[in-house]
Image (cartoon, rainbow, N blue to C red; front, side):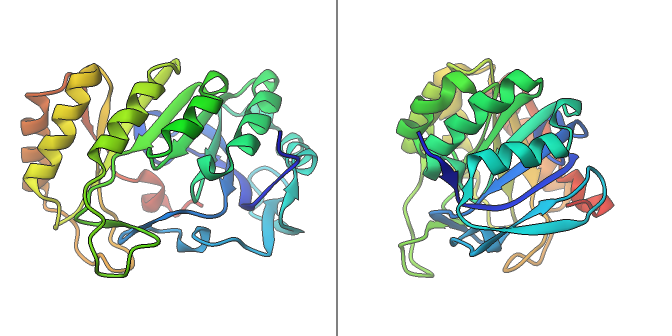
Length: 259
């Protein structure tokens, strides 16, 4: 079991996206990611960081710094100071938390008895790592990455990575072991109908009742344009013919300027 973890930050806020929008959440943001998404709004999580910032008091937006990697005991103490028991969820997010599966398991097992449900936010590719921790997770919130906007970190910039459908399908099969799971897909102007349909067909084959959240891109970095409403609604209509629970939910925290 890991004794420390590479982190970016720990803070208290509310969930800004997915099926639990608006619910009180303590965020533990892991460092490092092995994907590069054109629309990523937290590129500071891509590589290991020397320091981690930790909110000092719930709702204060005042932070102190700790050296990385952070001992798990210090993470738990920070969670207690932020009154973890008053939150509906602890979100283990990133970066990509499952690159540090031992730390995910250690934190989930320690924090879950304090009251909050454990919400794992993941790029949905590391199925072997998920299998190591899924018994400690309450909600698996997995992205379904589309090759039109996402590449692997070790692929040359501008080079295609191929699609991720088979890996996501394998991941979703493991995620079925959790009490709750949701698939999210970011839609941009470059998103192709055929990749959305391939995703929906793969989900339907595994579990047509798994919620699918269509998340309109928030323009950032290389993505400058929002997706027109007519296009988004057409996607919802088309995918609802294949799946039982399709929702259109933007990133709400961008609207009110939260962390």
